[in-house]
Length: 217
Length: 269
Image 1 (tube, rainbow over the protein chains, first blue to last red):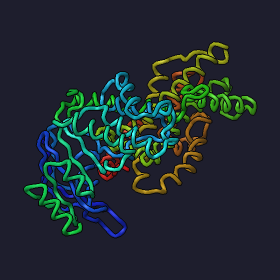
Image 2: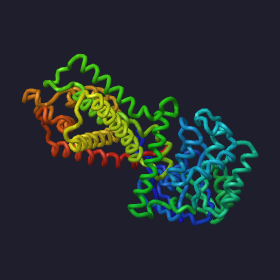
Image 3: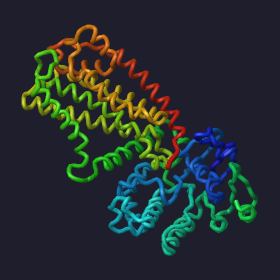
Image 4: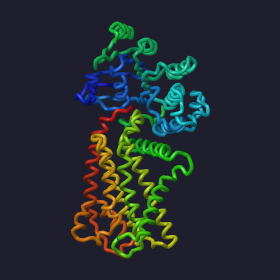
């Protein structure tokens, strides 16, 4: 289970502290899929980073009793000077997984061929996305945090990702952040809406969808 | 489910230590690759570079018969002095501004600023120490200077200088996040501190008034101690290790507390 209680997050700016999240409560149970909807700048990624533990809340508490992934996205968490393979090894070392038996999976899934031994900075955006997704699937967690994963690669690769994430890992909890209400409705059991630093809760997913689309949040 | 991936919060101190060791090792490997790559001699540059530095200075000082106030063989004087400088001076240079390029790694919960700092410090320590040891063995073998008279003393002095380097580096590395001008000030400061650090003189050769002032600098005590271990019978070493330890302890505490403060505010990118 993951529980956020009274979580507040301020960032300091030149004009004094800005409250990105005012007082957020959220509980995610094992196997549950929760969507977080919100417009750009609503604080979605901040919530994900707080849940992952990469950032600390200004006040309030965050309890994690299941293992939680890093925020899976198609950009960050990589070293562009290193090769794809070295990035894989680095992630494996950090999480205490043996990289040897993961290399074949990443090689095959990412479809990168010999590029896996090239520095990531020479990759195209699509290649980076494929590498990022493949490496994200190498370490197993009880709960996956997914940050705007929607637009990646061509249709065929998109299908492979769907299969890997939502079919093979159907029993895992997931927290999915997006501004795309359709995507959230298709993949989540319930969703919350973030706006102006507050989190709106709903009993069922269609209510969240309606709220989000009607208010053009 | 891989038990190693359980949240750290639940684990004991031992578990946290395991995680931290794992993370620092991962960062060490990554740092070695990004800094030295796999081309030509690769990670050997880690100690080849400081060796070239030290050899260059040794050669220069030998040729110019630099004034060091005694008739010691200049080689042993240069190697002990310049190796010490490389040890403590490179550490702050490696830590100042080291957070920014590593921000993307902070997406991983267990990677903290302290781990990035420690990985870089350990790498610097390994480089400077290997260089010092290799040069000592080389010069002793070719007979330019005698083996250390008291090797434990050399090790103790070296470790004290390491502590000084660690604490200064953590303090400045953390301060840089609060005040961007730290980097600007460190460049001239490190340059100016070199001639004052005890590398290029023996304390006993200086007038009393100068000794008093220079002994305020903690690294002077460390260099004197290393030299006392190396060739102590040939000069009168001047040092006060408790004083050096006190300064290092204060800098460590200050550095770690500022680090704790800035770590909370670091936001991954």
